[in-house]
Length: 489
Image (cartoon, rainbow, N blue to C red; front, side, top):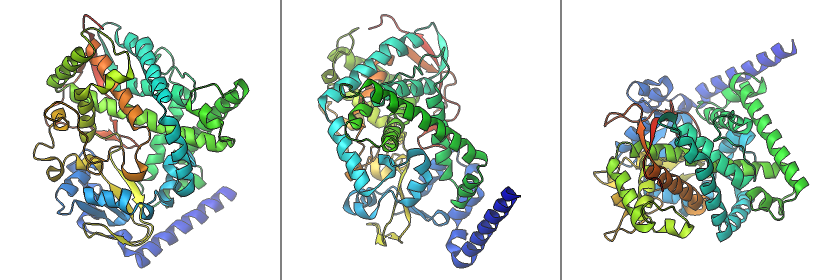
């Protein structure tokens, strides 16, 4: 009876909210063409992915900005707007409470889910640690060890078909767990089941992202209050993550952390609050695992269609490192300009984070004239930006690493507000260099040792279908046929 009464009460509240929205806030029920297409899902008749529909709308907008009124969301692909939000008026565009509430159960008070003093503290602490040369060398050693002892032996087992996306997720999770916690989950040991932490992490990431897809937060909040459906699953996944994280922290306190190099040990010397430590480390796991795996998956999907790029990477490596010789130092990597350009070009077309949002704290006006009311969600869309001619030229849809090289073949970065793959301004990604190091090291190691072909070659105009989530994930994975190349370095 108590459960039924609670259910009736919550349904009554929801109905009153709907009535209030209909009578007092008609904008929530906007019947403009864009909002109607969003609400009825009619966009899906023409586009496989929501990001492709948004790209279509943004490309055809004179200001490269659109408004989804039912979501109170202004979406932009205008570099001037992005600089305004991420730098010029940074303090008026925090992550905001709506975002923090959606991801709060999963990320807690981690750096990606907070603003103000808590964000500044974590940023300064992480910047100090991640900027150390010793950290870069430590990460380089972890990546190379995982490649030599697990990734290469796995791919060397005769000619075989593998889901490369799954392999990259397992690989990057092993690496980030080693770096963050100092533990080895052995995810890349395919003979072993995927670790409980990795499975719980996947589920929590997916279900947290689905919260944001609801037109009204009341939908998932009611399910959470009643412990139903996806919210029940999310609660269980987070409970598992919390238990495992607390156990790791407890063991580290027991064994000692002062002489360890992993991120957790470094933070434990400053922070005593176990819940806060858990939140910080989970945020780094999210950033270091899913984004790198997503970036590598898209990159190898593109390389499978562009053998000329693969050849150019190999030729550069033979010239800089030596034919049939292995990469031996972090400094050698800095000289591989074409490889760097290839990774950047891949993420221009297929960014791991397809869009990111802030919330307008006070009424404002973007440089293109878009009027923002307090509480408006402002989303910038790197995925769409990579497909806009006014930003990247007539050849914007081409996979062309050369666009990043000067005439002397030296890599030349672009304005970060034109290429906000790693965010820009004050919230620029702290792990940028580590992510690039991992992507480049894996790419170089694999293409010099193996021939990797898609099981089902795509047509020239075919695009991946993505799953809902915090990072871009290929629906159906990336099935590939892996063959050894002789001689191996």
